[in-house]
Image (cartoon, rainbow, N blue to C red; front, side, top):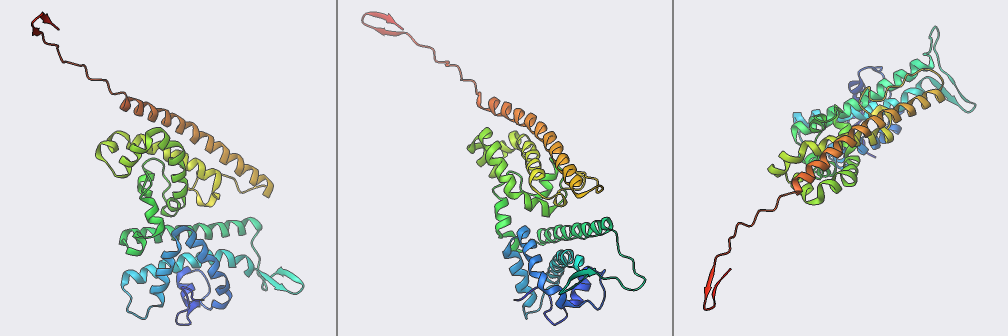
Amino acid sequence: MKTIFNKQNNGGEELVKALGMIDQDTTFSKWEPYIDLSVRKLVSITGSEVYDKVLELYWSSDEISEDNKELIERMQQCIALFTWVKVIPTLDAQHGNNGRQRRLGENEKGLTALQEYKDEANILNMAYESVDALIAFMDKKAFEFWINSIKKKAINKLLIKSKDEFDSYYIIGSHRLFLTLIPIIKEIQDRYIIPVITRANYDLLISENENAVDKLKDAVCRPLALLTIRQAILRLPVEILPDGIVQVQQVGTVKERIKAEADARKSVAEELEQSAKTDLSDLQDIIIEMNSVEEEPDLYILKPIINTKGVTF
């Protein structure tokens, strides 16, 4: 199976370049079995056609443009970081027929469990940031395969069409998170927004009708963004969410941390729901006002009709 590494039997060098913090003598064969698992992680965010196209560029014998070179390197970094998250916990352990044991050299001192957790969490955060950078680069360069991808086409049916637009109503600061939110945005607008504004007004907003946008855009997108984030908080892993939105202290037992996270999620979700309810109520008032068009008075005045029997009206 072809991967986006080791084209010239230099996979170790490519990993070192992508990560920057691993040994120069990194052995690619130890990482190779896990790369495909990391590709699956990236593909779940960007879509498979994006990876397939970049993989094709990587293995192409044609001369590669500077933009395509940078694109390949950015994708390599994403995959390398996700792979690192999978590999690094096993590097401190020695596995054998009798189980596993901690591997420490002479005069070496291992990390505490909390230090290991923070280190692995930091690597995972860097992996997600690298995906953000990759998506921002593809947006900036407007690669045809990206613009025509399933993920990008799905955005055309949304009332909020970009990370920057979403940030106007609730700051997420992440292209990767916006793509992750696509199915949730669609769910929220189908369940809560369209029944209020009607399908006709939805179609006008999607077509960017100037009159509909002026009257409805902000009133529609505020509750849509809040309810989307509420649903994301209840469903998505904490590390995917914007920094600080769900704050959990990393102390105590695992059971205590899980409970603290659940309580924090519930509290934030309830606050967002209350704010969204207010915005939905305001939206309903706007729709009622738009629909309550006064009937025009009938200004026709009957004229007298003269006939053989006299004058009638």
